[in-house]
Amino acid sequence: MSYKQLENIAFKQKVLEFLSKRIEWIIILRKENQEPLDEKEIFEELYDELIEVDCGDMICLSHRLLEFVQPYLFEFVSVEKLLEIPPDVMRFIIETIIDSLKKDIERKISAAVYKERQKLKRLQGEG
Image (cartoon, one colour):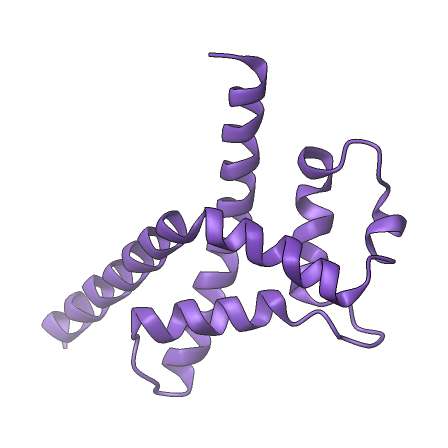
C-alpha cells in the first residue's frame, strides 16, 4: 500500500470519527424532541449542518470539519486561511468530502440508530 493510500485511509477515518460524534448528538436531540430516529432524516440533517457555511461570527460545523481535516486536506494552508475560503468554495469542498464518504456515513448512521433502538428495547424489557 502506498503512502498516499494510507494517507487517504487516515483522512477518511478522521472525517468519519468527527461525523460519528455529530451523528450521536443528532440522535440525542431527536430522542429529546421525541422525533423518529429516521436514518434518511438524520443524514439530511447532518448534511444540512455541514454545508451551512454562511455562519456569521459563529464557527459552524463545516468550518470545524475543515479545521479538523486540515492536516490531511491542505498541507500548506493554515486554519486561519481556511476560514477565509469563500462560502461557495467551502460548500463545494464539503459536498465533495461528504459525497465521497456517503456510503460510509450512511453505515455510521445505521449503526448508531440500531444501537439506540437496541438500548430502547432493553430499557422497555426491564420496565
